[in-house]
Image 1 (cartoon, rainbow, N blue to C red):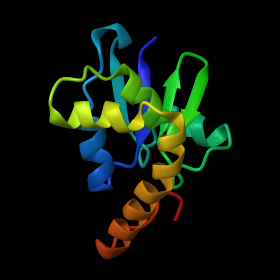
Image 2 (image 1 turned 45 degrees about the vertical axis):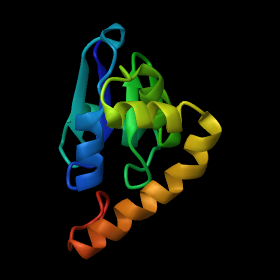
Image 3 (image 1 turned 180 degrees about the vertical axis):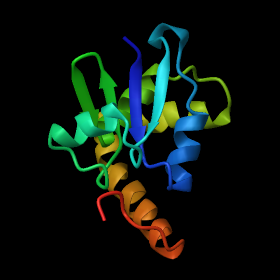
Amino acid sequence: MTMQIVYDGDCPFCSRYVAMVRLREAAGPVELIDARSDHPAARRVTQAGFDLDEGMALIDRDTIHFGDEVVHRLALMSTGSGAFNKLNAHIFRSPRVARMLYPVMKAGRNATLTLMGRRKIGG
């Protein structure tokens, strides 16, 4: 089964992040899904009780990872090629650092959406 990343397609930071992360070939194919779409994966995440305004999700088989756990897991699966991926892997390979920095990333997303006049996913 293909891993799926559900992210906010209206957020320029989220869109660039998922586009720039290069995953190792061992991770297999990854499907990028806009959380604002009516895609079954986006519905699955919200039906599981996760608020996509609070974070992105990674669906890997029967498991849904959410928020800081996603950036941590993506850092571990990253190829490490290119400046962005090296920096991402270095920073987010620690689950503790990912937990500490994710709220800052989320606040930046929320402020950017407000400044751009875009609504939240659920609103």
